[in-house]
Length: 451
Image 1 (tube, rainbow, N blue to C red):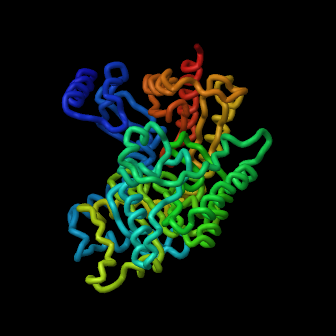
Image 2: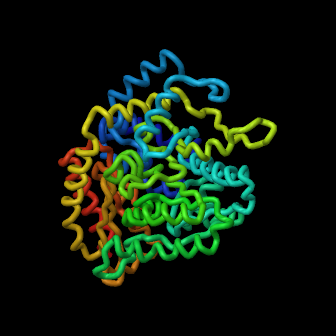
Image 3: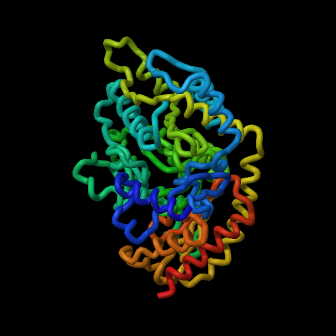
């Protein structure tokens, strides 16, 4: 079986180019071919198992090979796999739109499907700009975003982000945006609460809106957690203040809940914690339980009506994807929502989150862990060179990569963001598996910071 592992690795490295990877790393870092997944576990061809502590890039909610989702897909396969969604429709797409609109914050009335998270962001950007153009507000052509944000890798989405490793190479290709300092609570003063720090940082957003509102289509934000931006977090009060400010300045609010939606932050959607409704809500990742690519942009009736006119007016939203509203993907999403409806998922998540926080709390005294932060089922450990000064290690030393390699050797899939180790496991994890995940991470951090 070990030979079979190597055979797949050899074949892979001769033909594939993997995402978000310096392929030369695989001369030293092992490629892991997976033949089977069940629950939180992945298994390679040699029979070694790996606890999927990051939900396979944050998409898997209810475990690999989930029987509920499997059964729904099998049944749908016998009826319809896909049909063009321009001029045609089908029951899974209709039912999913109805259910999403019934579950999301009040005021969202229309659902536009796309293929993935980045595509959803592109839809929202174009939809906001085009809405204002249809109204005659042609001066509105720009967007406000937060520093340290991440919204995807296509050029429009990439322009809105602010994580240098993804963005800086392509800067000449990107549209100009207005970046406002993030409310990131890692930088709060000693003794300052998350809420107080977040309120203080909102002054930057208010100033930007006051100065630029006439040229701004929308503000886009990742509610509560800037995931790819090292899992930095802030208080929900920012969302409440932003909703009021966007209304006052006549600017759209786009909520990117691609990573934080569907229970990750403790509520079904993060915006619920501020009791606000965005003008556009972008969803993907956990939407299908980690099975198939699908995204959705939910928006208000007013915005939909801004495009509704005779064809000759040129107001139609002519954006499309070949696999828009794919019947299998919509079915997987419906099965995922069935699990939320029939099982006490959010209640159990609160218990799991509390256990995870308690298990990780012992690392607060680690000489190279500057902060343990948590929002719901997302917990992050910030590794630093100097804890008192919060001095980061030089990025070239790749301390997080040492943690990654140690974790793989000990049966856990962790994929640190630089030197931030985080846990974002499927919701079917149990306390013993959390203990393993935390123990292995602690050992890895010890090894990564011993010199």
